Length: 201
Image (cartoon, rainbow, N blue to C red; front, side):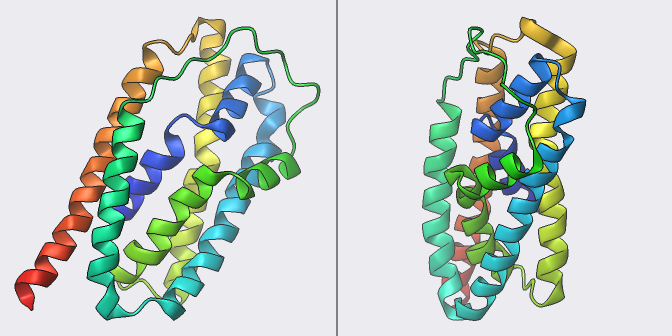
C-alpha cells in the first residue's frame, strides 16, 4: 500500500508535466493531448522497469532496513517541501504553439527530476522490502505507469472542466498539503520497517 501511496503523492502533486496537462485543458486541447499522456506513462514504465530490475540485482536484503531509514528521512523532507509549497498557475501563460504529442510526454518525463524522484525510492526500497521480484516488478510497474498516465490526464480534465476559474492560490495549496501528509505517512512506514528490524535483531 505504501508503494502506491508514495507514487500517488509524488505523481499527482503539482509539477511541470501536470501543469502542461492543465494548460492543455485550459486551452481546449484535452482530447488532442492523449498522446502526451500516453508518452508520460510509457516513460514512467521504462524508468520503473529499468530501475526495478537493477534494484532487484544490487540491493541486498541485509541493507534494506538502513535504506528504509534513509528513504524515510528523504521522504519526510519531501513531505515538508510539498506541504509548504505555494503554487500559482499564471493566467498570463500563452497557449502552446502546437498540440502536445507522445514524444513530448516521453521526453519531458524521462528528463523530469520529479519522475526520477518518484521511481528511485520505490524501486530501491519499497519493491525489495515487499519482496516484489521477477515478473511481478513488471506488473507493478505497469500499474504505476498507468497512474503516471492518469496524473496529467486528470489535470487536463480539470483544466477543461473548470477553465480559467483555476487561479491556484488556494486550491493548489490545499492539494499540496494533502500530498504532504500522504508523503509523511509513507515516511512512517519506512521508519516502522527500520524499527521492526532493530527490535528483531
